[in-house]
Amino acid sequence: MTLIAFVLLLAAAILGYVLNLRAAQSLRSGGARLHSLSGFHGMYSGLLVAVPSFVFLVVFLLFQGPVVDRLVMAGLPSGTLDGLGIGETQLILSEIKSIAGGRIFGEPEPWKLDAAERLVAMNQTARYLMVAMVAVIAIGAMLFARRRVDADFRARQSVESIVYKMMMACAVVAIFVTVGIVVSLVFETYRFFQMVPVVDFLFGVNWEPQIPIREDQIAAEGAFGWLPVFLGTLVITAVALIVAVPIGLMSAIYLNEFASRRVRAVVKPVLEILAGVPTVVYGFFAILVVAPAIRSFGQSLGLDVSPNTALAAGGVMGIMLIPFISSFADDALSAVPRSLRDGALALGATPAETVLNVMFPAAIPGIVGGVLLAVSRAIGETMIVVMAAGLIAKMTVNPLDSVTTVTVQIVTLLIGDTAFDNPKTLAAFALGMMLFLVTLGINILALRIVRKYREIYD
Figure: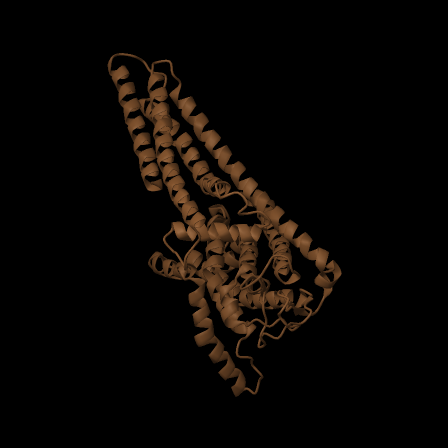
């Protein structure tokens, strides 16, 4: 039924567009001078039909489930939920939903079967009501828009007003979503710091968040010093940048300044294919090819190399970042004014001297911004690190040793039988907050550099 509602919405919007378009064309062919073009009259009807109907659909789908669940639970026999907690109530609701979906285990009580039947009936009624309301809203909007087609109606201004309000609504939604994410992160981080001292977290050198999360579980007391995790993140990021920055910049300079059009047309798309490779494929490459090769080479030199190393994870991550940096550097070099290049060549500079002394300094803002954004991406990468670097947090800068990163620890802390009332689980939010602050600072620095120097060269 949801698909039917959306199809109905789309059909009504198209029909409204056609009706108003033809009405405007009919007035124009009759000699009337319309304020706006016929197309704007059609667009006005299409938007007036589509926007309210779509908003209603989204709101209805958001609240349908909770409202129906509440009605079903309110219709249970009196005294059924007396003395039950939130978890037990949710368990009963889940069982009713399973019965309603045809997944019946054992012999459920009769009142659960009745509740399941009511749930199915209410959901069916809600779906019919949704389609009917969409039809009513669409037809009403269509008739209203049709009546407004006349010579004096400012259709273009009305369309622009609707589009402006849509863009403003999207911006407001994006802002509220961002604020909601940050607020939830701050709240859970605050709960964590009520259990673990801030000083122990920020300056502790031991990360072992293995605490008992159930009464019958035996585990250590737990240690939550994030410095080993952060140090591992820095080591892998540094290895990735050592690989990605030189290769990415060199490839960008070659493709932008020295490569022929035929070579550029072939090499650049091939290079950008790397950006579309899933990170899990890079992880396979790291653990099956790069890590064994590094281990064999290190053992041949008598070095102690771990099975999973920061060098393997960082190296493969660097390969993943090459098209990212190359694309930013290429765009920055292309944005340098042509007059700078021509002036340097006219003064007798060679192409290499022009690139090194004129083009590259002029493109530094864009290049630095791209590199800093690549740093943010390297810090947030998880899959490659999970597969190739290991899970052990160590205070080491040896790239041949196993390390772990912030994102990997967040994933491991939130997997399994966990409850959000113990420091082990809440530590993930504290790590997420620190990761958020670090990447936010890097992004702000990148934007400031780009804006500051862009004013000079534009």
